[in-house]
Length: 325
Image 1: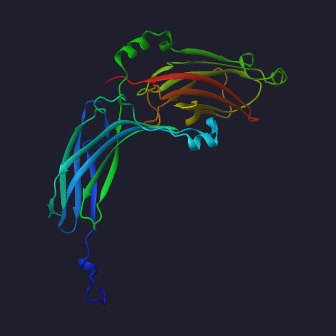
Image 2 (image 1 turned 135 degrees about the vertical axis):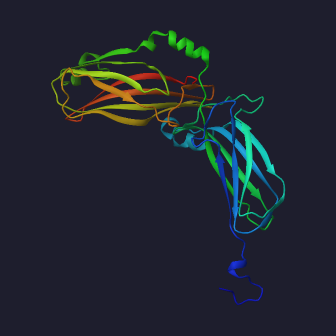
Image 3 (image 1 turned 90 degrees about the vertical axis):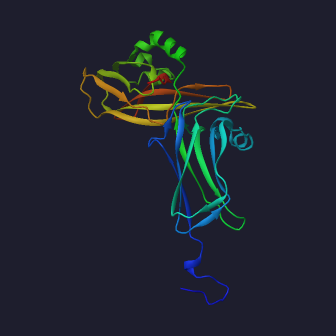
């Protein structure tokens, strides 16, 4: 179809769309410090076109937000916390020229290193609620003033092994051997004496293999229901992130759920061991981090829910690390 005006163009003669895609050399897009990330930027177009150069920007940053629940709505709106720059690099892939092929690949490569001379080291990739650590590549094909410059981006993931000295000290700690626990009415805290008299009689025992946990290994343990006067509806294992952000007026702390796993449903046979087994989710959990600007810790809640929906919770603070492999 054609327009009636003599100065207009047919649809066939209009500029063909140009698309970009970034293809890292690893399908998982997971890298470690000092490794090289290489790959291709692919430019696709149905027709030949001229351009003013192809550039790539590599960024890594820690984004911090304040929880309105912790500091108040007014404070969270007006108090800003600047993101921490980890990587900020611009790479020229090619200069101006013309692309005649329908598909053209441009190779790239760069090392996974923080800003030279910067105060912020590499951290694990982490997708949290109020704290996030993200790394991404953005490619842009520059064109003329009256032409659109296509661009695209993709995220890649960084896994930072814990310092060997810290790993060595963890393996020497007694807590590395595991934790035995007992849950009974006598050990329940934060309850009035009036309510304590209404608590049914029960006894739960168990153990956790480690509370200093390797993120690449499952969180394991065992639970045994010795006896319970009241029927049990469900037993659940909850992973909780505890995010702390420092700002001008103090510190904002917020605990949110990462995942919840049911390990028993309905009637539980007394004295039969119930396995505890949980995988740490990639990117939504990370190594425990403690810096001047922010802190990320994790806890595990063991929740026993009775038929009347009353819940008994046992809390276990854990420390997560990553070993080299």
